[in-house]
Length: 482
Image 1 (tube, rainbow, N blue to C red):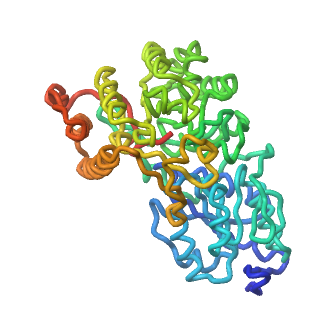
Image 2 (cartoon, rainbow, N blue to C red):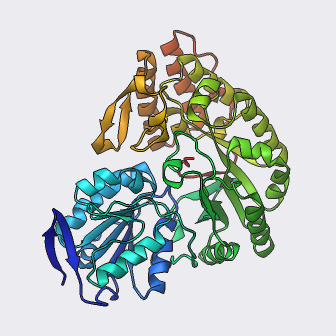
Image 3 (cartoon, rainbow, N blue to C red):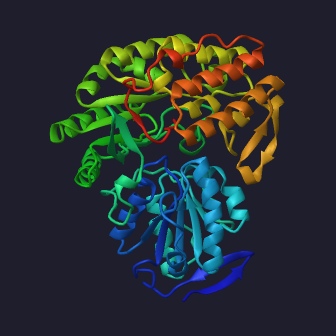
């Protein structure tokens, strides 16, 4: 057992050499990764295994918290790639600490890096941002050797560190100990629900959209994953039953040549396996010549962060596209035979009531009601610590300060009608999701709430003109965010 001591107000774990090589001495925990099997812990598991460790895994989004796994672990590493995962992860860390007071708890992922100051001040022993696998394995080595965890890329209260942004070799992710793919979100198309795999062909992003959590961590850098590694991961998931693959890259077209090669190899080896990907509006236009081939290779739909149709809002977010670009990208994607699934930041401090109505009109006019997950109508601009938005003078008049327990800054819209609309829409889409309501019905009700706020008639119902059993575009059974 470790000798735990308090040094400089921090917990210190000292282990005998090699004592962390037993099965379960390291526990990797995933909290929420948008409904897919957690690659966020599958890759660290593989790298740790190469060092001779035998980590246990736990995905609390689909598995109950296991106090026995937590109690035996000497290093518990919690993956928090998004805001929801961070909120869940903090609660999980409290449960870990309750059953295992002496273990070393490390948070890693985008939202760990953004909230490092808070986490390190509230009982978390270390934080890793950027590319986590190498620092995490080095941390395990240091703890196993009884050394202070002064490791590049590993931030502690005594030794701050920025994100780890070095290219590292990545083996095939280790998925054997994870819950089966069938426990996660499915692809829904043509009345069927299909098992989905999830891979990443790149990490980080070239762009610096102000509202995105990636730029504060990666600073405009991205790292391509070797195609052989991507294909090896696809093979193991197809063998496990996947008939569709989600490419979860922040932007699939950051490295168009590399991902096109991956897509070609995927189709050559598994011609019946389809895929989806995420790409910026500007990339869809810049690389529109690639879209027809991506469709032929099995591309079913693309998720694109449209965010707003207001050029004012788009400028404040530094999205790199305009309203006119959205219309052109939609045309290009449809002409290629790929479904277009836009995401929205429906509520920002600069979104006028009329802008919200314009978004709804666009969705109806462009026949996108079945392409938009209704939760998108309620999404509110999130401003986490270290967000690039905090550097923008345009946001400062609306900020009400950091709410640390929410891991975000509170802001207030200057129009009380917009604030009230957000509350009403958020409540309704949550209830509609629980009822599995037809998205056209949800759309009508959201539009009715907007019309009431604007003092207008909601107009004719969209749902009445659409049969409930209509053919719908392919989609994931769990809403996808960009």
